[in-house]
Length: 358
Image (cartoon, rainbow, N blue to C red; front, side, top):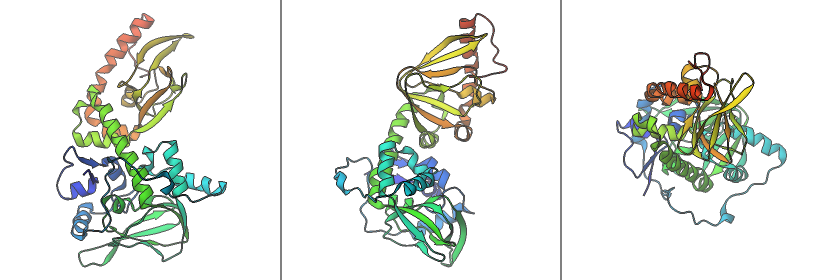
């Protein structure tokens, strides 16, 4: 059985993510903090974790193993019809949901079809701490929602609020455990809810599959050898899939860096234009990466990178790069000489890369 671990549960016990059979959504947890916070942190998270561990109790729902084959008939996936206006609002609401980043276009459409609209009224309890029959994951479209967690004396303490965005409720569905907090609507608002089965069958399985694919990818990147297993897990969870067709410009010379790219499959051509003449500098394929030096030096791109045929990459945005790849920066800096020599061979002159970087 694959055990699904979240960072706050692992670290809250003073332990580490362990074992080949455990799945830890590290970046998701780092981004979310817990079942109750989408983009903020609870004061004294360690105290909260200790309380949560004491609160745990068994629940009747069967544990879900995302590594097992899914034989549930397609007809059993929930479907709630929506008009164009609802779909547009829903797409905007889910745009920032971290857990949906692992979904491809087909999976995302299934999730959008399965989500159903919920009207919230002031004072309404959306979820209650201790509920052992958690059935939905929630995405906020509008409204303000207060988050309460009981202290040692079992008194509810206000520890966070959502304002017109965010999501909550995934941890109880992943662990099949009681709700970790109470969330109450302060104002009128709208929520979108996703049922347990669809969340587990589509969202959780997609995250598991993405983790496996990206772990294999970064294990083959020599520069990332300095990362610990836990840091690698965080990196996998932060990577975003992007697909490019033949001839698409992935990176353009002169642009400022938006992130780092790992090639999952396909080939790219690196070119540089000087004095009106564009020349090929290099070709990169599976397992290679590009875009790191512009992030390190914070200078414009020195070259363009174009897809040569269909190309699939894993993208790491600049903020995640700064947060997750600190141990590898010095190693990446050593590649500056390699790029300089490549440019000298192509253009027959010295390129110190002082004003621009790849």
